[in-house]
Image (cartoon, rainbow, N blue to C red; front, side):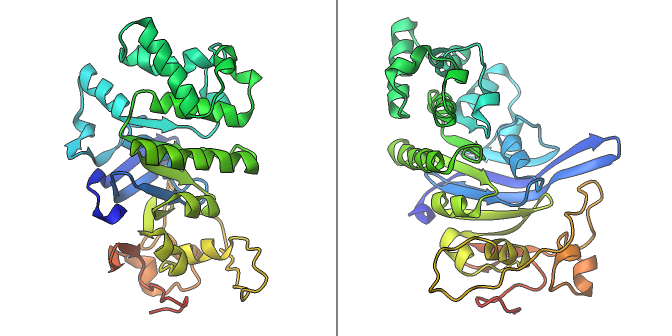
Length: 328
């Protein structure tokens, strides 16, 4: 079980602010969580909530404003030398949302998958390079005949398999999957998700899976973190969170999941009124209070503590919900 495994990644008080003409944009604001070896943590929330920025800040594609990111108890934000950064790039990889825009259109499949090995100088001679690339193509379900094909000649599913192969070829410990199936057809989504699950079992991989699709998150994740306006508002084991959401935002998101079960009592769909506030000028107190149906005076002035309400279940709310959607 994931609960019995060692912690691989620790994120502590992570912040990432961007300077804009209108002021400082709080993309990620004091986010903390752990991911155990061999586990998948799903990160979910509306577009613009900061979940992709979290993923990129963890692997230093965006340099964090402050905080700590520990990989096997080493703070990777302190890495400075070329050798340290090369180790980081080998140990932590990312698969992007749009495989077409993230792949060099002038490189064929073989060279795209071989590129990380060449950059990291992680092979001895051309024969080993060729062997490892062809083996990786087979592992991710790419036919050998596609080695000389270019991205524009392939469908979205095969392009995403190239992205996955590029991440895996350097044998990483941790992979950020940033909306890896959202640009794909539903049938292709299932194939890629099953492939990610198979590869995790085979190589003992650890994932941060970022998505706005709650059904995908439920399928792939061991635990789920819910983000709103740059902050984590709830985190729990997947089954616990989907059965017993404790934050009003989580409750509203889950109520919107379509169901085909006509025998089940129809749950109320909770509409979240209004627009997401600006991350340049976020609300005081609880950031969700401007759209929350349980809002009271304390929510407008006091920032709720992100605290444990059950083993492994943390939530930041002044009016935590009970297991039947009623206020505690």
